[in-house]
Amino acid sequence: MIVFDLKCSKGHTFEEWFDSSADFEARTKAGEIACPQCKDNHIAKALMAPNLSTKAASGAPPPCGDAGGCANAPICPMAGHSQDRRQ
Image 1 (tube, rainbow, N blue to C red):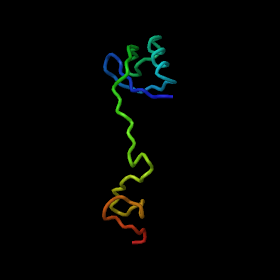
Image 2: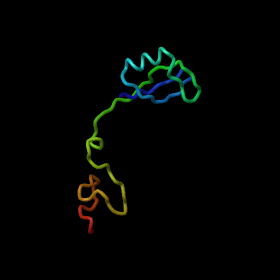
Image 3: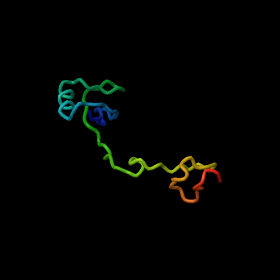
């Protein structure tokens, strides 16, 4: 399965899941895809941001930003946070 960002001829953007790029092409040609806002079926793929791997995506904990205590200690990446939960 693949998700595409789509755009209708009136400028509305939305997402839709497809089995493949060929599935998108076939369903578009058949007029089976319609904008959920205006029901327009003149649909094209919208520009999509690339899916880049980041430390947060790789399982590293995100910065907590919790001033009252760090839920991620002792592995918190935020500078100055206690490395011991008992402090």
